[in-house]
Image 1 (spheres, rainbow, N blue to C red):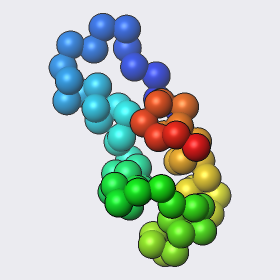
Image 2: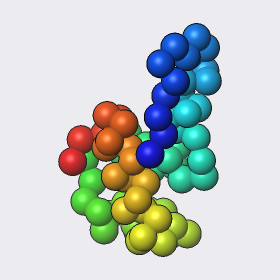
Image 3: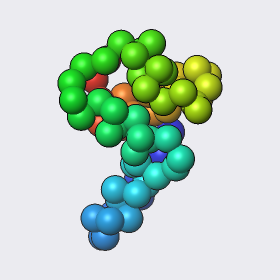
Length: 68
């Protein structure tokens, strides 16, 4: 999980700390069309392992970017 510094002055830096990495932006893009089940996300992103998908979804949820 990414922890933001208490006083991140640059909004771009703060955003990249939350959604940086290989998969988070792809996952968020996949969710833009609405709620999806885990299996639906896995099918739409075939190159991601289920373990990594699970970890990334948990991080996005912990950061408050998605709801379960």
